[in-house]
Image (tube, rainbow, N blue to C red):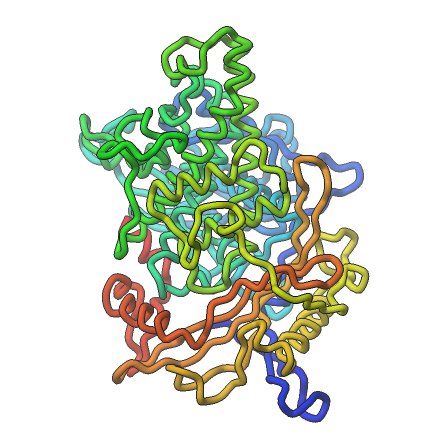
Length: 631
Ligand SMILES: [Zn+2]
């Protein structure tokens, strides 16, 4: 639970019936994570070599690539503006001094050559992949993304510490309290599958997918801090699935791997295991020959032909379907396969013209050999489409409720986020998403039709305007993706707080006065302005859309029998440049059904993520360590 430090609207300045509210420390955190900015005369990117998947993938098929990491001045570590790579804990052959990527030799040679035997290279891989993941979020949302962890000193800069050699063990996790990512290493078995050396060392921190996955947990925690509360299996499943989706779509940025996969699969992306497998080496090192498998795959059907949302679910060979009580990682895989299936559907539509120009019938995909020019054209199409899908997935976070999200609500967020930026869906992105979610029985609650108008979040029935939050009243630090500073963010939060807690508007935002007397809740805390941020999105046609996105939370103490636990409700509020409220995406604090579901989950399915503290149940200290320990 974040601390709060300011009580606003003191008595006497407003009507007695206005609801008192608080401003969370998280509002100011947005100004304390300050990433690199383009410096006049400095390069935009720093070329660095990385393993595009992991050390098990041959250089010949694109296993090593030079990537352009956003340029920033670095201290040895590397330590930059948002990441701090910690070389501590390496096993004896790999112990290494901090890496100085600004050394002239490394500047002239695209960094170190990738090798698992060079301890300093592990630091380079972690820095490069973490930075590319951060850059993908920054590009999609048009703003800096703040970490959820507090600064070491009040008001100080917040960096995420990354520890590639954190511990011996087959795990990796993000930890908010320590503000760090920890990657383990372990010895492979005596007869591992794939190219792994028997008894050789396997490092989670050298796996592109695992590093992206953990960085995404940290980014998502910064965007939606309450998704850290294990009150609902869907929220944990979403954290897992979303982290894998980002890793999956970033595969498509590595051209050599992409072209190789398209050539080998003859254009059938669902059959391109180089792209669809996640964390290959980590999985293969734990598999036995003949039963080898990556840690996870984006394709969940028996037979590639079944992996297409243009055809109805084909019986037993169809995709896995949602069922209540699913395990968190199974839920995450369901989300990955639903979104990836929609991606392959749109890719097939977009590639049809290219195939016909090359004299191939679209039905021959997966069978006919493809020429070099066609492979390159298909790879360009796939790469651009993957970037668009990744943008949609990340932008949808701004349209998620602030607490207790269900998978179906993520579909609503995806459809709304995309419709806002691309009103004319001529290639059917949103239709493909709705179909592939439907094929997996991932339905949003309270939606009677799987059509865009029904699935998209509904706007307010009346005009609600907050003039103090109109674009012309906002102050920025040089560019509209960055607020002027802590004082400006707190001014915005106060303007929002005054408005949403006023007697005539509090019910629109489903907020209640603090104290006693709410259904099912023993004690209600005052509403809390949790975040207020801008979203600046560039549509494919060129226009730039600007909104403010805020979270207002309210928590209470619920009693069931002798047990007490915290329970949260609140709204995500999307505000247009004129200060008009476009969406209020809410979860009610007085929902006894949700309270019951959380209580059941805490005693049953999600018991391992909670511990007792007297009569109270509280979340375990390191959620992701527990979650990944189960994978
Ligand atoms: Zn995870």
